[in-house]
Length: 240
Image 1 (cartoon, rainbow, N blue to C red):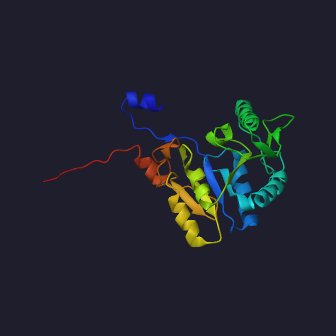
Image 2: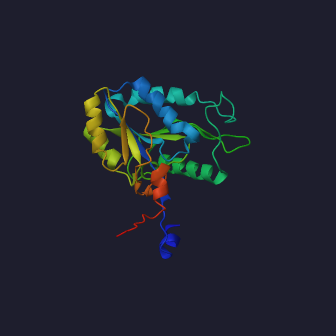
Image 3: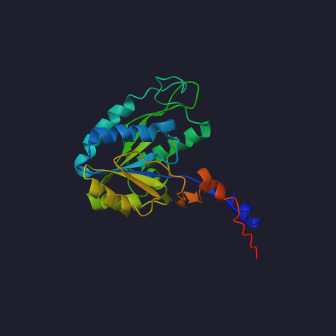
């Protein structure tokens, strides 16, 4: 699309993918973080560019967080998305489900482990049971690529500094969140997430229309009046 637009001198906006970091520090409210993390990761069956995707956990609280997260994810009920009691609907297409499953399988082969072993669900519809893979690291597909579906990846960090390094070690640039009870520290670390266009503390990340996409997440703005202005020209009328 970008090549075709460029060849014809047409303005374009690319709304591409993301792999948002969800950093959990030792002083975080783990119950709250796990609840919001599950809601953010599995929203729309995990098919959201701004969903939390990389859960970066400081070692000292990693096991506790994963147990809480696992319990809440396991409780999600697969079914008709039009029903109020459904927690997880189907994926959009069969090929997307197949690709997601290959990414998970390849990552496990490379050394990741299952914390919650889901996978393709039997029966009609492109359902994929909630899945959590732990001990994800560099070189694995789950670390390097966007997983667009109901799979949460857990990455262990030695400490706060290591967590920030991992958060920025990604080719995408949409957003992320930092979980800590220390508001000032959370703000400071969110500001240091320099390779994300939006960062939040102790809350699910939300988009804002004035923000441009960066890195492999695309370019331009696509929402509200800011998005409209990406495709119109400013005109000057000079009257003497």
